[in-house]
Image (cartoon, rainbow, N blue to C red; front, top):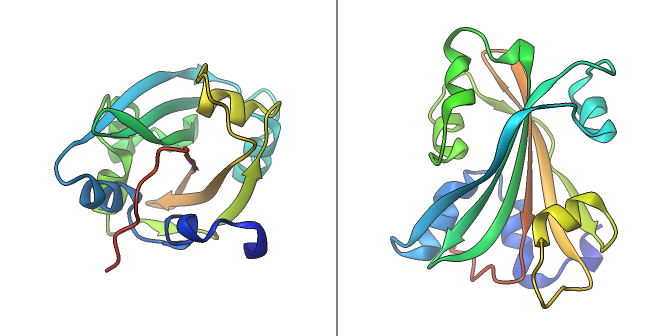
Length: 171
């Protein structure tokens, strides 16, 4: 799968640490989370499968853009099953413009599953959601997704890297 991945995106796609932290580092203090959409909705079929949810079961869907200097670098979509939003995890439904990564990576119970990579093309729902109405639409964009477990409860995070994404800081 890596053979088609642009070299400058590899460190973004393959890093298992907090994307929020990485983007903040690259932006030198000009980082912002823009809430695009949040509400209860049925997950996409592939999201349901990844979370092992039955058809018709709802979830909280949160879509944000991670901005650097006001330019969107990442489109992120999080699917949180209703069963996850109980107890201490209720806070996940009230993040607003706070970054999810800061909450997840601060939780000692958090476990991240396998990272899946995808090339996303025009005509696919995730492409249209991520790119929006940009006048210059790329031929394809790259993304990744992982299932996270917090206190044993699942949520799915998809991160799509947009054409304006900058250099990837090395640790």
